Length: 65
Image 1 (cartoon, rainbow, N blue to C red):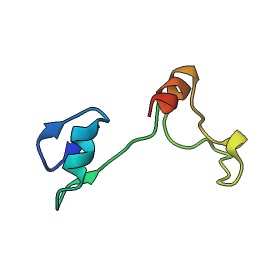
Image 2: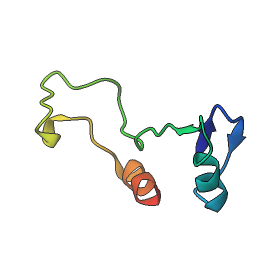
Image 3: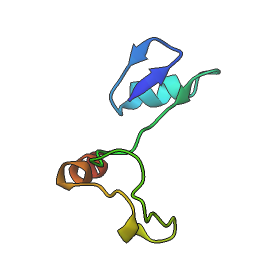
Image 4: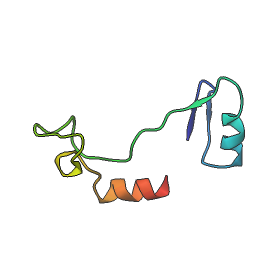
């Protein structure tokens, strides 16, 4: 986990949770790996099958998160 504004980097540990409790600290999280760029031409928000989905590596990352 990167802690924006603090100049710190931490793993998801007690230290990270403690840092997040400080005033002015926020967490920014990006989704796991989903190969490609942008949304597909037939993208429909309510239909996951039309969206750019996680690959096997992205699913492993999501499980870790």
